[in-house]
Image (tube, rainbow, N blue to C red):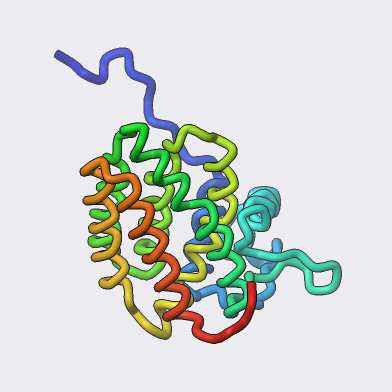
Length: 218
């Protein structure tokens, strides 16, 4: 039997999507440094595209918080400091454990979370690992049953990926985070909603405290 008979071909990434992922990876690997100006014409020339897909990609990245737009500086890569990191994690600590608690209580499938962990373990660089970790968290909170809650968390997940990528340059603690991810997933797979939520909270709070110590308020 031809399992592909009549099946639609997989979608081909749009030019904008390719440009978007290229710039995102450049930011998360540090090839595009915090504060660096992102000039449409220069990026278009480097990537061999017109300015239009670059412009659209930068708009998307501004929406996810990886770049910032200023009247005087134009578009620049988002800088990460303790205040920014604590603001991002303040939102996550308030909302993400509750979302994961609901996901587990609903008995939602967790295959995507397991697959994201495997991709993180096999990652070749910080960008891949950070994006896989982002997908792990998304796979846990996404099926919470409240699309608005999931969208709010989606809005900060690229910034969280940037925070982790920057932190790992100074302190490559991803093996510790990976162990904690496996413990969270094990609790979730066992149906322990409260235990998974508690481990998740401690995991995120511990990471930001280690990576950005100090008393700066969010």
